[in-house]
Length: 157
Image (tube, rainbow, N blue to C red; front, side, top):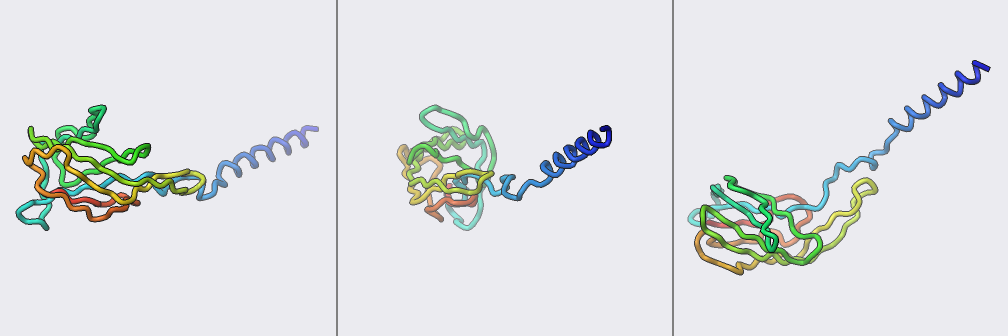
C-alpha cells in the first residue's frame, strides 16, 4: 500500500512540475501592447538637428492630467485615447503654452492569446487649436499610421 501511495505522490509531483514548466511561448506576452505616439523635438532654424525642450510639461485635456512634468527631453511618447478618435494636450515649454488636437482612426488588432488586443491608430492629423505662436513653430507628421513605438511626429521649436 505504501508503494502505491508513494507512486501516486511522485506522479502528482512530476505532473505538477511538468505543467508549470511546459508553458508555450504564446502564454507570455512579450510583443508589446498599444503603441504610443512618438514625438521628436527639432531645431526650427536647423531642421535636421535634434533640440532638447527644457522645463517641458504635457497636460492631457479635459482632465488636466499631467503626463510629463518639468522634464528635459528631445523626444517623448504620448498615449493616445483608445476609446475616442481624438485627444487634446497642452504642450508647455517654460511658461509658453500651445494646445494640440490629435485626430485619428482606431483599429483593434489581435496580438496573441497571452497579449490579447492592442489598438493601432490610422490617418493621424494634428491641429494647433490654441496657437500662441510662442514656441511650436512647425509640426511635421512622418507617419500617419501608429503601429509601433517610434518617432511619428517632429515638432520644430
